[in-house]
Image (cartoon, rainbow, N blue to C red):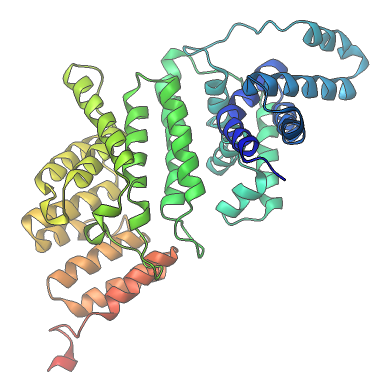
Length: 422
């Protein structure tokens, strides 16, 4: 019979120690395959031994020692004759080389290696989830709706490219850190977004991905506590994740923010997110760095989640924040969201005018057409609204979103411009 205490200890150790073990092995052996395989073997050994021998007093140390022995055994088996002196050194010398870069932590080096700009974005995501997050290849494949073979090949090619291109296992220099960190945060946010609103498939929300992204965000926050954008991204994810249970109805339909049951939101996550936003506001007021994209998005979500009801949302404050965000990130998607806030303050006609200016840039983006459909609906232009809903439905891939858009479209009566009304 399984022991719940041992199972809990194994799960906790995997959650807390996987990245640390892989990262330490990667630094010592300079080989991601060796690091990954040895760490996996150590956890398999733990599953076999801990129920018999008991949970060790220091699970992380036990796993690190076991994984190191597994790695040395593998290197011994595979080593060529001329490499024996290197193996002997690794067997006897546990002194870690001096870390490079502004932050001395193996896990941070591993994150920057997995998210190196030389790798394709999909490879960065897969490698980060596998080596830093500890997800299995089948778990990652299921999350992104590809076959296990495809995902395994994607990870293998990424590791091969790191080896062939001699991508260094280190944190970037202080001068390069900000630019490279932006790429790391983009990978984490991409993982979160794919879980928050899955791009395709029958599962509208993939909690394993949002959970993993938040775990990565917490790790980055622990490693880079002074970075405002790291704090901003974590706050943004927490405030968004807090609404997860209210975002899809029992029938599988998306529930929009203004219709959600705010009593079902996770107050602990909201409080944590608000605390991070307040800390960043105080730091910025004290002159501690500029306000970046993730910090502004987090502040916008803080305004939404601070309101007791949808009617009490402070749209003026949200519009002010979007005005600042447009200066930082003038992308069409940001401008689309700003137009939504504008419509709440100045009316749907002005909001629609702003949205229509984005038609060329966002013609293939379902949210653009969904926004137009809602604004046209509010203006009583039912026929045009129906056409916009049709376009949004045709471009959307998320099942809950499609169900919501379809219901909204089907609720429309014939518009005044519809000849059937005559």
